[in-house]
Amino acid sequence: MHFSNRLTFETDCSDVFSSQASGEVDFVLVDVRGPKTYERGHVPGAINIPGRLISAEWLQAYPNTTLFVVYCAGPHCNGATKAAVKLAALGYPVKEMLGGVTGWLDEGFELSCAVEESTSSAIGCDC
Image (cartoon, rainbow, N blue to C red; front, side, top):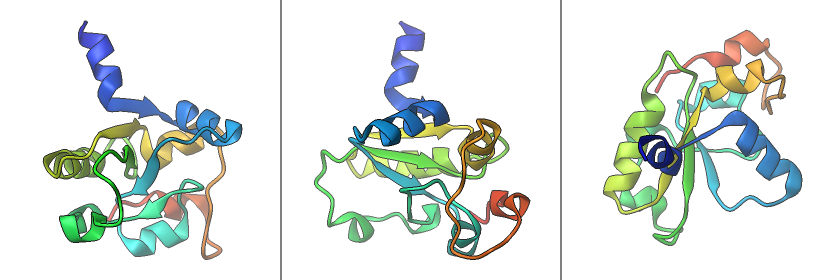
């Protein structure tokens, strides 16, 4: 039962990628790092809402049934967990994408970049 419950609150990079590849995306993917780090590289399809800024005002365009999948830099950062706590407190369903940017790259997936920089500079947190 414990492990089934965990899957209610987490997903992984491969599952997110598979959903995107199949066109069956039933969630809003949120990069909770700061905007400069987001611009250096983020998971394709992700929007940027820095974790420290998550509020009812930022989310007013989304129905309270919207599933959010949040991620941060990687397993060394708890920014995604903190963001998930905020989203859940606001009444939204939420999952944490395990691995974050580090996990995404480890799986061999590409990042979307607004500026040309090395992949390693995209992993920063600044959440």
